[in-house]
Length: 315
Length: 315
Image (cartoon, rainbow over all chains, first blue to last red; front, side, top):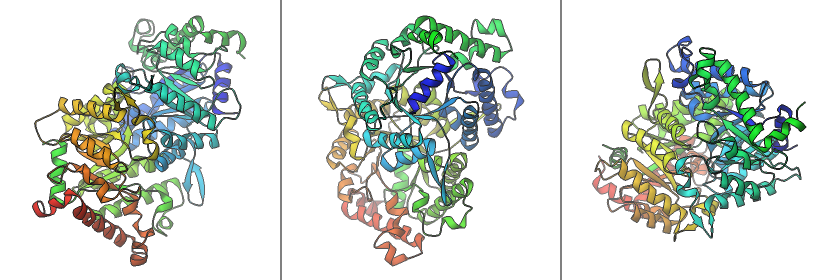
């Protein structure tokens, strides 16, 4: 079973395509949270670890996939990276699929080193051991095929996944991604290569181990890419605090209500600071997180093809 | 004094533009090196740290800049990242300029987090503290301006540098970088934006804090970009084991023999395994490293405009 099959089996099991993003910014932790830890680099890293752990406790009964944003952990040096590492292991122990959002990229043998680091095994003494054990990693395609194929190969060997940035959700994504060459924007050229990378490791399963990051901020592009990339899992950022609605992300799904996972980071982990959760939950920030996940599940069920999962897929 | 000024003052001081790349692959360490450490993840990470430290001891009297490839450290999880962190600090203590080659990239506030992590300060308790203290970081431009400007702003504030991937040195770099839009290849569009980013933080100094990564494998492109990007420091990979010669990298330099630093990683740190160093130095791998650096300095002095540094810049 490829990563794509495993991913959507898990989505079907919980009945929703919500991807909870854990992007812990110290300044956005719940009020008082940081005060429980020493005001040191190590103490702050420990606070990030604890916050991630608490979020996993709340969301793991409801969703199947989480994504850790590496930047916020790297911000605290080796101690922060240790907190990220602990989060990934804990998510997997809870039966969640853990994506590391690190947007790694490099040439040939260095890409191979990243791939083995996050998705595979590295030489330790006389044998090989996993270092990160992430289920999937986000990668950046600017360096072309020989910067991506090592990730695909290692992922295929280890039954892991790769999400290639195709069209991102930020305002200036179009600076280079939308430039038109040979009648097609660059992100469509990336999509065409992505099809080849997916074919190179195809097992005949409907969903590939090679996925695509496609932002929710341009629904037309999402629909176009969905049509062009059947069987490619879409990781869709931009829902919620970045302005995307359920209707915006609807085109990411296929006719089975599958094919996409919809990320929400701040909208969930920062719900305690926003209406209506702030008024309703006050200091119970976990209650706010839980309610925000429920509201997102309901929103996607009502307004996207993912609603079909509820009638067909629930255990 | 901008990062670019600081960089080339250091290059002038040592009289050469050699950038020693530290890319420690366990399987390429000198024979017997790993045997001195426990055959565990932590032991292997400690071996990488010690190897980096030994390389710095050999090269620091001869060169002014080193570059650490993050992938090979991340391969050993948090322990590996701690070894990278130690290497950066040690390089700086030795008076070297330390570049972290991590090719980071993300959107807006996440790019800001990476920038503050590697180049600036992060919130710790009541104040802000540096986490990595790198002198410069490599970054990937696929996400456009709002994925790069946070790095430029933080670098400007903290007197650090940023090297943006423009044209990389790998075989499939052209998959997307060479696609032609509006009459220009994508990498030229990136170069045009890079000029804007550099102008946005210009202090009037000749050399910018915003640099470019331009591979040595395509000398024509190097010449073209050198003409288009005056005052932009070039980080040039591809010399040595990737096949680039001194003549190939010559177009990267300006009329002062400055404007570029030339990376060599395996060609220096792996010299012990290659002729003529293997025969000459046998088990004295540090001797091989030292001779390989000397040979590269001489090669660049004889065959590139960097030779001018020897008559004008030596202490």
